[in-house]
Image (cartoon, rainbow, N blue to C red; front, side):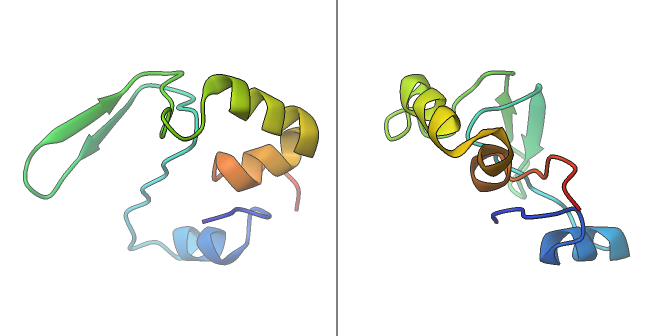
Length: 84
């Protein structure tokens, strides 16, 4: 989901609890281990691109420059940048 602010629809649900938050940013910001119901684990390292065949690092860098860091964070990283 696109994140617009801390207490957007996703933020409200996470605040209320009872949900597993699966965040798949365009660029992994930290090492992440994703456990699947099958028992299989997917390991993402920092810097991993979610869809490198569709959105290369250069494309993502260009997008970040054109839309700005705040919009990039919400649109592609699924994270707010502290904007309330």
